[in-house]
Image (cartoon, rainbow, N blue to C red):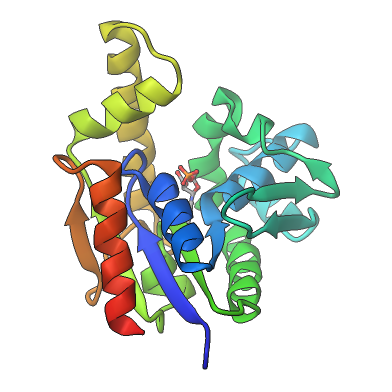
Length: 223
Ligand code: C5P
């Protein structure tokens, strides 16, 4: 039988990564974090002295870095030109610049092709998480999920992950998330959007375990 393709999209802080990894592990599927790929190309641009506000320079360099994603949900990996960048791509420098780089059409073309080839080589199935998976990358996915949560819930989760300690940390995280979501939703080329045939799951009042169970059930209904 053909591999089962699950697309999970939504803004930052909705639990996409935690949910996607757990669902993939439970079903014996692969897992692809497409945000990590956009972060990796952004890291490479910064590391190579490319001005990421210079759209033409970013476009010219888009095909140069060799990005490799490991799809084991128990231990996902990401390398650029053979360098393990799993740590640095989570830093504030990359996080604050990734939306500018990911808005460049040449970058999206390169990364989208990579994502499609990884999905095409999936065996039992693959869970692909991102912003435009259901709308653009894999429009024929067997199941599309769009995760949402209130701005407050998303900021609280992300601030917790970052080790935030007080109300000021929380406010700063909420502002940074809002900026990134506005950029990702407002860009011209494949913006963050819910596909018409996606199932929307509002995770504000759900535990991670409840979201995982909900998605696993939806996948099993498709099999
Ligand atoms: O998911 P994560 O927050 O790591 O994604 C980082 C950034 O990568 C997003 O803010 C967005 O700019 C970009 N991205 C994208 N399309 C995707 C996944 C991520 O543009 N499919």
